[in-house]
Length: 181
Image (cartoon, rainbow, N blue to C red):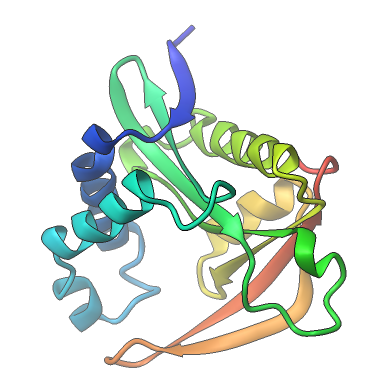
């Protein structure tokens, strides 16, 4: 059996997190994001953003977790309190947003995504969260299938983001914590 784990990200992981994000988007998101967006991705900008998220999270309920296979960082997830919920949202103050969950394609289909999601749920539960949400591009059928397979479902909300080179439609999925896996 492979030596696999999930742990909190460390400052030394930031360059690899940024590389995985850019490489994964350029590999797996060619049908999701416009080419100018993918071509314009900057490793330096991604590193700066992840450095702040890892070294100085805005609250103790913000987390960046990394998946490892042996000593290779193969994926990551980021989560924190959802801050853009509609006023009548259930569990408004106890909802966590899974902002990113990426596994580098060459490490896919080995359970890393499931381990990252389970660890994210564990951290959210420790933080007192009772509900989780995430936004997924409507054309990312693999990620939608992953979340649905883990017990998540759409909640009727969608949004359209202006990428600067076209629009990206996302749908929101949600799950009651403790019922996901």
